[in-house]
Length: 178
Image (tube, rainbow, N blue to C red):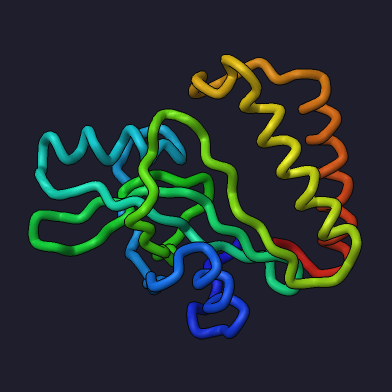
């Protein structure tokens, strides 16, 4: 997935549907060393204890060009001087993210599903999005919703992962890599 152009019409309308009245902005990424990947909800508060500032909640906006756009619930650090920065390590290196502040949401210990919308009318894109939603539901059933880190997945999650991988390969053949 890539950081989209915030001035594209589909990006603007997607962000308006998620959080009306809020505007997305590019935030520099400066990941803290030796921290776990994608664990913003624990990394930012610990960092604030040592360095001050605030935790800001919102959505990282990503897209797979010509395929779909996605919002991932996320938090960033607001330094004491007011500068916003993403300090969370990610699997792939990014210089910046597109961040949509959401003053109405807070992290309360449970996963929040990503919001995805197709850009393409391809039926495989829609199937991929349906499977992603089902995967989130499966990964958050009963006590799984409160587990963090590595979890043992169900057979159904393994099946969904396989289906998503197959669809992903087909989409890459049609549209190019994410």
